[in-house]
View 1 (tube, rainbow, N blue to C red):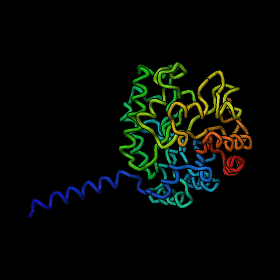
View 2 (view 1 turned 180 degrees about the vertical axis):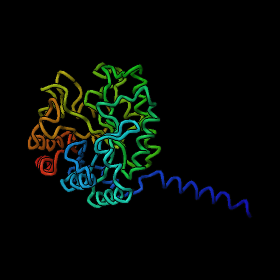
View 3 (view 1 turned 180 degrees about the horizontal axis):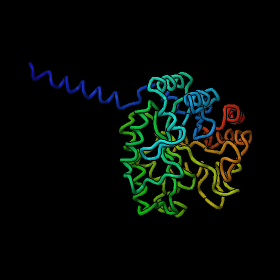
View 4 (view 1 turned 60 degrees about the vertical axis):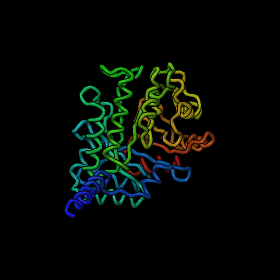
Length: 325
């Protein structure tokens, strides 16, 4: 009889471990909605980096972003084990206030994530993909967030980076996603690749024969991609055709429909654009025109949503998203 107690005890321990491995503020209905965007409920993603932050009460900035109409708030950036900018400010908020802020966001239909990486980060040789993904996901859970966005930059043409071959780069990114999923369970994972990071597997476009992020998607699909359709040349992604059906000659094969043709699902491709002309070197489209492009995108079966780089202030960012939708 005493031996029969042990399996029950072990099962109890496993349940506890499993429960603590998901976001503390897990909201099944909301999570299902975010994972299934629709024309009536698209993703509205906003990055908060260093501008427009209330540094004394940074949680107020998240509240403002939610009130402005965004349903995916991403605080930036986690650099390895060191948070910076808004992510660093978030660590100064008490656990209780973190939880209250995220719960309030959930009540308003929004989730809050952290972005790991960015243009100043190149972790590919100092971390394994598994280590990097595990670290970022653990940080998110420790800070009461819903998940992690991986903004992996500084890749070379041919999808190499540092001493990693193209295949090793694909595997690094897939390992990163897989490790984060192991930690986050039902939490959210997104990536923020530049549009040219996608290509056909076996093709000869910018990422080479691996297909770049297309191969990563096949191995370890995230919940969605915040695709950066900017900073690739003044003629790129600035009209409907270039953005949705046939991209510019600088980076052919990288419009929404072309990325989808490689096997990447339409409902994971979020169109990323700068909020102001000063937020990117090029690729800006005024929000009213951008809204027309997004509406027209429904003709090819797309309705996923939009990502804005970057937060400035409640008035600027509310006006931007309200003119788009």
